[in-house]
Image 1 (tube, rainbow, N blue to C red):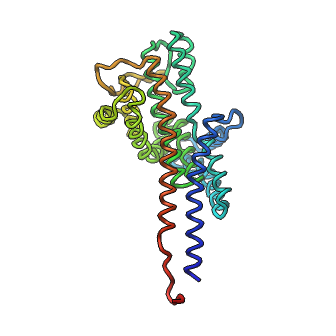
Image 2 (image 1 turned 60 degrees about the horizontal axis):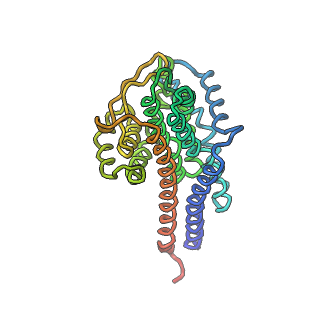
Image 3 (image 1 turned 135 degrees about the horizontal axis):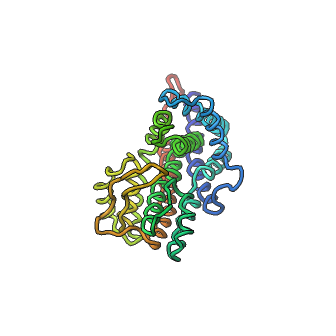
Amino acid sequence: MDAERRGVHRSRRRSLLTARGLGLLLGLAVDAAWGDPERHHPVAWFGAWSSTVERWLYSDSSARGVAHTALSLAPVAVLGLLVDTGTRRHPLLAMAATALTTWVCVGARSLSREGRLLAAALASDDMMAARQRLPHLCGRDPTGLDGGELGRATVESLAENTADAAVASLFWGSVGGVTGLLVHRGANTLDAMVGHRTPRYRHFGTAAARLDDVLDWVPARVTAALACGWAPAVGGSTWNTARTVLRDAHDHPSPNGGWCEAAWAGALGVQLGGANVYGERVEVRGLLGSASHPRPDAVAVGRAAFLVTAVTWSAGLVSAVCLGWLARARAQRPVRRGRGADR
């Protein structure tokens, strides 16, 4: 009887893994078709909740920052656990829940679209339009940026956000289902809200920034590897891109961002990095890519947007295949009979 129960449990687990992989792909398909929800986006709800918690707890203290991060993420973690627990006996419901959450958490279409719109503005030499679009991608001050610097800011944002807003969500969705998707998206949103090196958040935002770094460590390197694989599709070389990543990734102040940005620089044959202006704060970063390569132009920005889509779908397919392989491996593992079982 114990062996029979273990067999039933294993069968359900296999079905759940398969449903999770299919749900991730279905969620990507919905995102590709419709993009982010235009109204009542759950990420906005989370941001409002986190801001409320910040008003309750704020003090420029690392301990208060830890409490803020934990209290902000607690509701989404509980919600994810409830959904995962409630659907684990129903593969179709689990697939639907995973697909819906993936659609909410992954913003690949919107990211790629912003890149294409900015590429179009650069191609038509409309610097005013390009400067107006840049804040949709990053917090950098666009005032006074020329075409090359606008292109650089766009490519850097596309590269880093592919890992943050797409590959990392898919990775944690594979590992932790709906709970993994929601917690990662919440942590990434917290980092965007309070993880800045500013006087207000110098200590308070440390916990959110460190948590986001930890959650994105593996996905950032997966993103770089996939970009290396897609380099020939945008005029680059897989091996040259890989060399660029290994040589330049550590010249970036982020433990993860450099891997993505160096991969895009190598694949596109452009140079990234330099001085970034955020209001009154100036951050000087190392250069990524060959010194002989130009700053990104409109063509390079368009190709960078293509890489967003290609890398995201590759990550989704890899996630689904790995989950399918794991489900198959569990199916082929013999069920051990308990002591005293009939022979």
